[in-house]
Length: 252
Length: 115
Image (cartoon, rainbow over the protein chains, first blue to last red):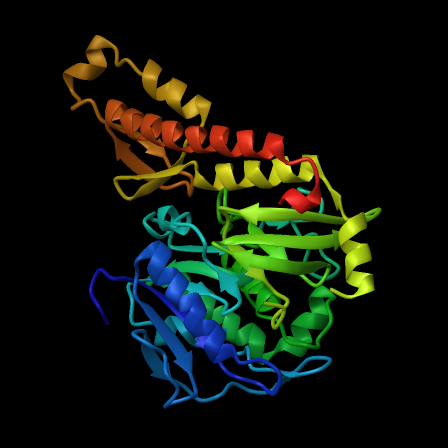
């Protein structure tokens, strides 16, 4: 392990529809540009070009079927063990870092933080989703920052347990068992390890900007996204100086 | 552009309130500073508190002027108030100046084609 080091990890396992490795390399370039920390890409591809970024070769995770493609997302719970850094930032390969805003959180002392607040780009409101049929705030595994410490280790161990017994937990908390979502896994792990919801693991003043399938990307240049969405009528707006979760893969 | 795309482009609306909220969210995300391993959210309240902090004579006898404050993640951080105040003020200037510039640009946009 690198001593006193900060770094970012992005997982990239291609499927029949999306080139996650290409997206991960682009995301890694952005992390280096805006946050100036090293990036390690975790992938099963031993030969593809990852430019100057480090690579850890890992076996492809278990198949997780979505409606129209296979999703290889189930390696998130292993990242505590895999990470070569003391303090690790995890982001999804479709997360576009466009600002240095994450640095303040990376340089803080919080042992484990994960996104919880979501900024709705169609209403301008910050929202919190709930887990299944419960009133438990849902965390989004899209971004997390953690130290190597006892508490974080416990969260990841609990996450592995929840992943293993996903069917049971889906029935207990009342959410769909398919597809398996890391968001749910980590929400439950945080809920249980954090004294049944007593501890707050959410990012502060850093909402997740989810540009989901209700938005259509018109252009993305110089870290500025112009997008369209349906409200009472067809509207357009822009997002600038914000890190963006561009979930509509293939639109850009 | 085909006819349908042209029609869409012509009828697309621009929500000014949402545009303002998008800018506000960007500004709020930037209003953070690091100090002594902690992260603080720069607010008017924090600046006012740091500015107003004046230890009483008995307190100052035994202290080096440093106080503990809870950071944004509820971690106690040892702080020299005037030092943190300086950092917060600097960030406030930077971010609010940017905000003013962005706001000026925002006021000029009247429709979606100008985005």
